[in-house]
Image 1 (cartoon, rainbow, N blue to C red):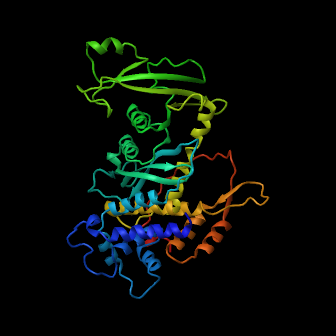
Image 2 (tube, one colour):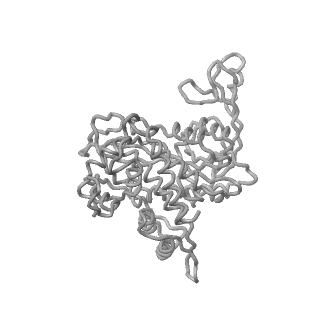
Image 3 (tube, rainbow, N blue to C red):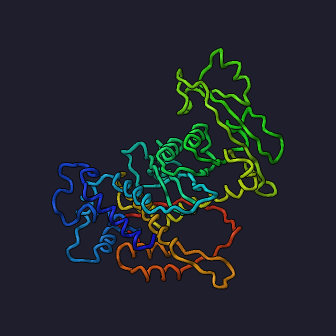
Length: 436
């Protein structure tokens, strides 16, 4: 879609949501029923366009410093009437509408699943997200963002937000798999996502999967008698059951092909005392070399002829795209800077940031980058394009100028570069001391 069509689609969906305020307001009988200075659509558009500035400056930008603009208090009261589900619906509807039928990898959608912590203002009254002080560190609150990301189109397809102490990445992943409209996909995930239940949900969905697993101490690889060598491609056909009766006990002695699933472990396709007795999973456990001394082990249901170990190695390396997207989402789009303390308002901004990320990527991907005799291939500088796309969203930049500006800011692609990840403790910035 062209940039103008992408912006028009986003504005149309916001307008459609505003036509039915009772579906997304906390008090459906009275909220957004009167004609106020800032209506439901204005609240949503203002939150979508927010950066890392203080709330007064954000409103100055949105209302172009008009004398009749509403006060900060009025804006906060109006957004308090709006459920986070409004922005969640906007995110999914916009992504589904603008997603084009391209970007396939051998006929599959190439998806990645991962999660990331989102630090918010400390709230001692919310025990599920609050983390008490320890070792001289100040207390804080935390949410966990679970996402599914399209690696070829570089957009987020779905997201589930959980409070820190209630986080369950397996449950979130299963939810996103089951409600996805993608018919055929390859799902990539890092260590921690491997489980029979996740694999079964992919199998029932008709998806392929490629999960990285632990070399040693993994419950999945125990009792399988894997080859005692550095590299291998080991096929497995495993029959899972919850029943321990005379008809199954003699089978369970063959641990290479039969496995008992205890009642404490989640497996949605086996219910105790109900048929079927067994659920069959067919997969491969592959170990390949990634450097002179390092190896990785993965589990997959991809065909061994079409996807040999070398191809799996290249395929799994593409998963790093979701890690890069988190960096842009937090530092460029502004997921680190919220304009509220209430979790309900923060959820609004999380889904607004995801929507703005997709909005920027859909526009940026439309810009053609020519090599023009350069030494390296070049891509659009996403940090610069986000600022330009945000101004385009606000109506401050025309489509021809938009594409010309984005094409001016490029970054070279230098494959094979490795930088160590350096994590440092950072405290939140007060609302009144944001960048101007």
